[in-house]
Length: 434
Image (tube, rainbow, N blue to C red; front, side):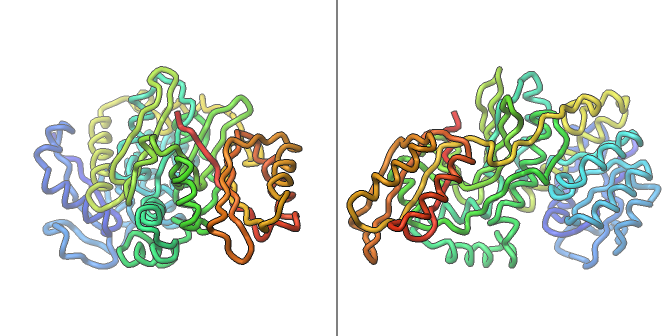
């Protein structure tokens, strides 16, 4: 059979890696796909001779790729929202299949894109949009399709994980590690998407839709960053038997779906608590398979290119399949997506770690305990660090049992109003993940 012709839009790190992998492993890929996959055109604003693009038609217009009648599959690797959306929709309207690594595009515009693809009978594949080289989308959508997924939790941003790992292992400050992450290229000059949880929320939105069969609803995901964490919090967590990870959590409850990204205490003996550096991991709990952990490189040139090329292989395999019998984009048939509500964070339940700076006076602990008790919040453990007293203040560390977020918000407001409590109460959610 004639090779399938691919047009790649964007020749950055992932685009270059995709070109290299397709050329280097061309014979192996053709054996898996059943026919060859040929890069026929590349759109890039700046030629990059370090990538193997000899003999490939080059253009600086991504829309020329979407309109090229010789192109069967458009690979969108330009990132962002607006231009990427326009490009993908144009490719679909021209009857072309699409492969993308753009998590922001899928999380925000995926519902529209998938509906258009269904109308035109084409495929939109996006394995590379979540967790780089880890095939977690395929695992949930196909490998775990017999399961009713109860919850999933993931370290799905390598930058945040690198920062927290360095803070724990070397006692460094957040600001110090962030500067190194930027120097190493792990974090952008503006690191907001990484350290405030937006990037992870994009990915969590996609995973939750596939796990629970709900429409993509990024605007309802709760996000909280790691910028307020200190080395002291990391050390206190360690002393209590926990590790702090910037976690994305999606959980099915009777009331609705929890969809939240925030710093989280995880018991130190859990596998996911020991995922360090820039690595990613996603833990999925199903009623039949139990808990399964998917671990690997969440970013990088060839790790992400691996997922892009795997999607290309899947699309090529499906070209002879009846469009109505293909694997659905979000795992469930489009007319069978459920209307389970996404819960506001105030309705979600967690255990909590609290760090309180209080004046070193008798009766302060009793006041704190009383405020928590009045709101039905039970204390699991408590630690006071008199040896760390500074300016007459003593850190008081508490871990509570599970309670609704709204109750904890009320309690924190009352604690911060106490005359003997100075500054804000630091709150980190606790997940057992078992």
